[in-house]
Length: 339
Image 1 (cartoon, rainbow, N blue to C red):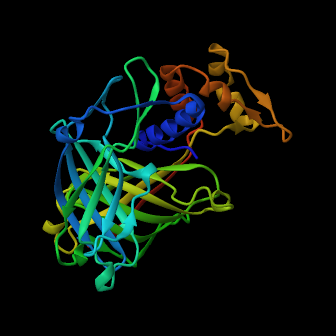
Image 2 (cartoon, rainbow, N blue to C red):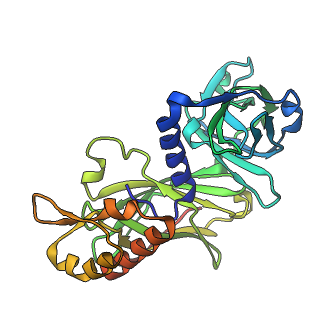
């Protein structure tokens, strides 16, 4: 799966790959006894409905270790507890969406799904794990800090049905491109849009998308295909995405019709292999940088592996060059009003 504007998810995937590669000699390190005192967590927002819960947290401070400070986000798993302290939901630790905020702290927005409809399943507290995270030490090693403690924060008592919407309309253009939005989850600072597209074919397509709030366009932060590991998902033109848009106004200030999700156009991503006609468009540029290629059993020219082995700047340049040289786009726009 190739991803456009997906810095966060790329970091997650590369981090997991790196950790897997060095797990046999991973450095385990201890935290300073004062680390728990250093970590301050504030609740920025919380909401739940019968089938989802959202918490947004601001984190200040860092974990100190003998191998240097943990400069990444210090939070591990996040759990929801009911009134009796029983765990009713837990975050997917690989996708705890922790990112730097504008004040130099960290901001976490965690959306969890489950059955919160009955009294004993209502989320009453959020339990935050401090530690149980991996980081890169000052000398470049991958280290793991074990759990050093937990913090619990009380959650609001009432449901907030405005924190999720279920648009039912379908947008389409003459080319056959279609979009349906299954749901949108809101936090005070972001929206998570679950949108399904009917693409021209089963190829690798990326899109230009944004939220339209009044006349303000807010571009997406990243997207992923949640079920991309499921067999057959990437073999059909029907594809569903989760799209994260950050730095939005608080959803509680929206009025009906204030906000829409828009896909401006889709573009075919840089392919791994091309036919002879397209190869002739790019082969001279690849030859300048000695990019190796092979031909597969169908006669296609395959070169993506050679580009992946180049340094970051050349990799970015060649990806951009090839996308432009082989440009294939389908114009929208596809627009669906969310509230």
